[in-house]
Image (cartoon, rainbow, N blue to C red; front, side):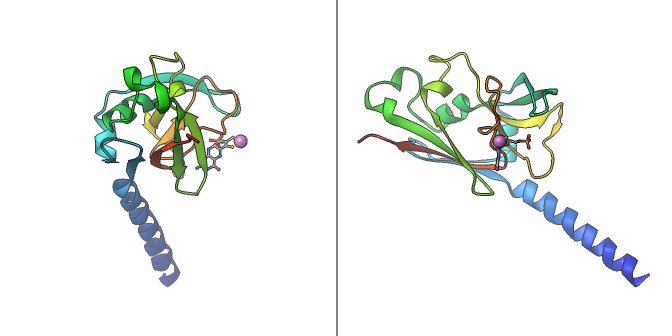
Length: 164
Ligand SMILES: Nc1nc2c(c(=O)[nH]1)N[C@H]1C(S)=C(S)[C@@H](COP(=O)(O)O)O[C@H]1N2
Ligand SMILES: [Mo]
């Protein structure tokens, strides 16, 4: 009986902690941006979403829904579109996650005036929240066969300047 009570308590605390972590999640956009921003779950949830079809590492097709990175960067005042020229061409985006994994994108490859390839900040897979540990946000790059840039548990979008 006591063991059951302890197990129950552990399960309760684990799920309470998980729910807390999910509601506390936030995404910071920082660095070379005009309007540094911190988005909460709800802020991203109400932005215009797109749904893309893409294969997971085992080749299984899924639908991923999320906000194009381009839209988030624009909202934070990153030099995109007509402003993406000259010395701004030496800027890049560093995406940082909760486990310390980091990946880089150049700005033009995220800009819909340069590329038809879309990169999204996904918050749903097949209509559901992303699996525990892979969310609440994950980058999805449908055009890429290798998934190394499909960074999960995204916490920070940092725009940096590579200019020498
Ligand atoms: N935060 C984070 N995201 C990550 C990684 C990681 O170690 N940490 N590994 C990447 C690599 S190398 C691959 S192949 C895919 C694997 O994703 P999957 O386990 O959902 O297939 O996640 C990518 N995203
Ligand atoms: Mo990988």
